Image 1 (cartoon, rainbow, N blue to C red):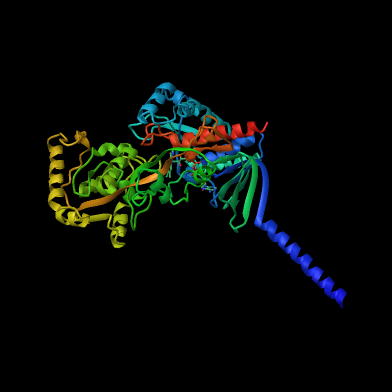
Image 2: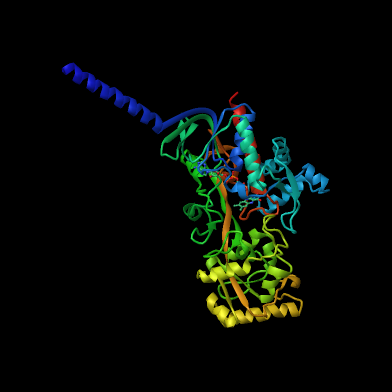
Length: 508
Ligand SMILES: Cc1cc2nc3c(=O)[nH]c(=O)nc-3n(C[C@H](O)[C@H](O)[C@H](O)COP(=O)(O)OP(=O)(O)OC[C@H]3O[C@@H](n4cnc5c(N)ncnc54)[C@H](O)[C@@H]3O)c2cc1C
């Protein structure tokens, strides 16, 4: 009897041990690799492919169920000296462009790093072409240079998503392992070096990836109100990220915890509207990219509205207003011009090109009104419109009278805007759409050297740690370099390419 009991107990113990061993295994999944990349967006995939090409074993942790991050929505990369530009006869030199970028940032940027990104930009395009990514160089807006290298389609994917999917396929061929729904949560830091990363999978299991190098590529913090409030000069209640992508600065925070220095905090702003019935990049949204009359919360005009031709400037002017919002005011004639007659004058990249007719504007306006959106209002009189805008009717009427007069006298007495852009507000129905600044991506993050290695407060290299893409700091002054169209995407690819190669070569 005793021996049966003993046997039974032993069986229970050994089954339990097996069970716990299995659970234990399931709970802590441990991997060993050469390079682990945190983030499978544009820069992370470039880093992963580049490291694998140079002989490294690579694992990529991705927070979301799909790869690509905001790169899926990006269209073009900045580059100078490419065959596309030579074919177009565009002959501005790298040095000239570099000097413009430095001046625009008021020399508050990392001069060596920027020089390297300009210098390497054409090599990045050639490298991507060698991997099967195609490009066409175009102007982003009529005011800019044609340095925006639009990604050509791949399979059923367009623009940034085409590049992402091509890099995923190449990575697959090179043996890169991507683990989805597995956010990196902290760095493994031992004996003065980063030696891997810990994360958690979709089932809540801990994932430990031990590696010789970690490349942080989590795409910045456009969705973190806390980080916008803490680190930038902006108000996180007033400015939200364009797309809800859960890019909360994870990689930057992990790096700071092991002593990384940071610099250059900011946001890449653009103008937008929001509220019930508004679709991102829909017709109401696109309408506030147009150069119609803009007034602030007091009903006063505040800017030459052709600022819309550089969206970062337009959004700066809105953010700078009391309350950090403004209104676009227009009449039925302007409504018809953009919906039926000429189409839009300021495009949103190539997704919504110049000349597009906003044929859904009426339906979106009607839906917004029905849903009670206070940010899109219309009325038969200016007084009524002003009430809906909560603006003093007398001031709004005066602003409109003056503005209309500038057209008649062919002189914008307030801001010297070319009068050809004045769109008189005369014919009912009258419309107003509230304009808010929004963030495409964040600027600023970890301080790095020219090898993309993270630096500590004393500019010493943090061994084993690289930073790429929108997690990097020091690349912009107070405003994104929109005239060097595609800077963020170009830098993401170049930093990824260089970090991946460096991490792989450091193994040898
Ligand atoms: C609508 C839109 C259009 C744009 N168009 C352009 C353009 O034409 N040209 C341009 O230069 N820039 C453009 N941008 C900005 C562009 O997205 C960036 O330039 C660049 O592509 C970002 O690359 P990235 O690798 O830094 O970030 P992403 O490509 O966003 O990659 C970051 C990845 O990290 C993942 N991640 C986050 N946290 C974790 C974590 N803890 N663990 C694991 N993974 C994590 C994210 O899910 C994401 O997949 C645009 C942005 C938007 C929103």
